[in-house]
Length: 249
Image 1 (cartoon, rainbow, N blue to C red):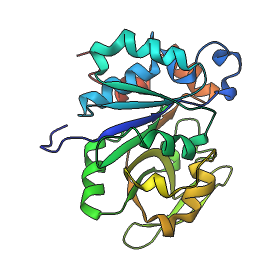
Image 2 (cartoon, rainbow, N blue to C red):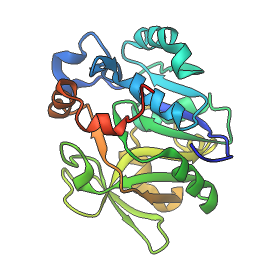
Image 3 (cartoon, one colour):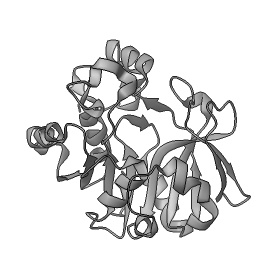
């Protein structure tokens, strides 16, 4: 990252069961599935570390011990990583609230551990600081989502870019969709109710009160949680080679 600013901590959501992938995730968590011979999560963390992220917090539950083994094995490559084990599956919102208690910086980045958007983190963080909203969400065009924008959530913004409406349509053909990358103030999730819930069902529909700013990106979104995407990208890296260009340098 070409910036004098230090990047904040980053929470990576890795707690899901990965049921859409069938027996592929019976013995291995979805973020640790191999893509081109390397764990997908290793590719993610290596790329984000190259962009300047200094510390990661993995929010995990299913097969949590495998994430602890992963961190020990790759510590020299991915740097400081804390594994935050949820006492029960908490959903995307509950997991963020739980993991945010481990954040040491005034704000933090967050992303899903089973997907990657080819949007550099630096400009998103800078925009978040500039606008002053407690919550920034990255959005991409539906056609930029590998496998289609199913259940990603359609976003409507006002004239200054604040989120005004979030709808969980089964499939989105136009406009903007949630890319699953966020920046938020460390204390923001603590105003959310405790327990298990998803951002998409409880927090984003209440966008006006949450003061969510939308960062509209030209990036592409890859989600390996979809069987057709995982099979394609594992067989031949294809777009992932471009998304993770320079990973092995």
